[in-house]
Image (cartoon, one colour):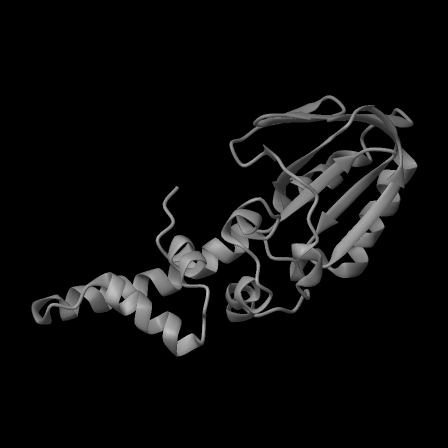
Length: 199
């Protein structure tokens, strides 16, 4: 993905984030940039479309904290046009470059847009199950990091209980099944994949 965009367009986007109050956007969430006829930026609770010159169509997902960090240097850029280029593990914002495995090619999704800014950790965990979102689609979405981080709390409790109940023949899988049943989660496969996810 590679585009050239006017600085004025990016400043408008910056204002959108400011109005939303970035502090309400989950720090572990991500932003998806998709370049086609326009640049589309989708994150938790927002979607912006801006005019740009697309030199290479494509989309990329980066951590919201990283994207927010670029706003701090935006005013220091003297040029009226800014080049944004992304490839596997790398994104370039004008003369600034960042390498991270968290930067990945991704398809545009509407999952994060549907999650309200004031969503609680529990609402974020339950969102994919209440909306029939498959594991594969969730993994490629901008909200995956937030779901995975909040699920870590569930993982800790399940593992701790499994250790204490091990003398009675209770396995971690048994407890996971009990939790899914108690929460009314019918998509056990997706729940188990998220619960037992390992980096």
